[in-house]
Length: 313
Figure 1 (cartoon, rainbow, N blue to C red):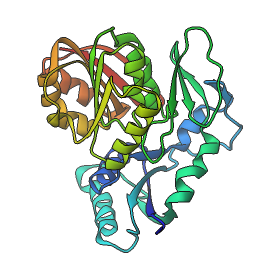
Figure 2: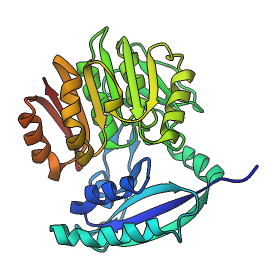
Figure 3: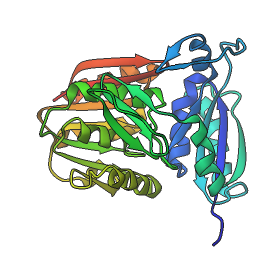
Figure 4: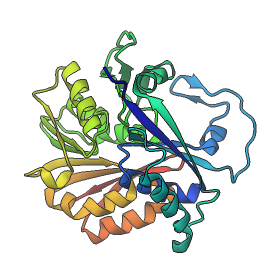
């Protein structure tokens, strides 16, 4: 069997350009984005977060660059896509975004090494009041009232570790009603779709543009025995017919703005739209777009540099 390889692309940029850089990488074919922001770690020193006490780390500069990381299938180190990414990152200054230092590095990774080495850092964690995210390879004794989600993220985004996922999970607990129909746009590992089903949704339709994410999500759903409640398809919301009581889109602001007209069309009257993956800098822009689409903002939550917004049709 031939070993599969992936190209890891790391862009060092300023906090204000993170979302723009993430958008460039996703348009280049990345199925998900990893953001390594040293400022978040610095803020967490000495705090107890979901049972984990962050270690003491050195003070960092307020202007320390953020690493935006993506993975492309195959060996892309010398192909045109890398040159295009570099060109587009440098061109952000033309639209008023300081993307400095704007340096880009690439690394070739064997899929077998990448897909499993991170597991030692991913452990069972509680999110919200009742949800418990448990890796499939760990054991856990449920406590009264626990809703346990067993998950193997594989190469898809969505472990519950990132602020955007936690914010969405916490909002889901408050918005799901028994019998709801839910759409999960950009499902990644399927974590939000699984949570919706566990919380009482009658039917969940999940989708993702990344075929790897679709495969991972389907595997997690099958493992949880929720195949009858959750379906996963490749594509975006425009490929889903009918209407939902709740639509989730934990993506990035640019994609949320792009799909917003379709979201409104697919929501029943009185339905909720849960939008995540929004940086604080883009919050007002997204809120204005929600209002312009006749959606009413009913709740929001913030953690670190990220915001989740709940609006109602």
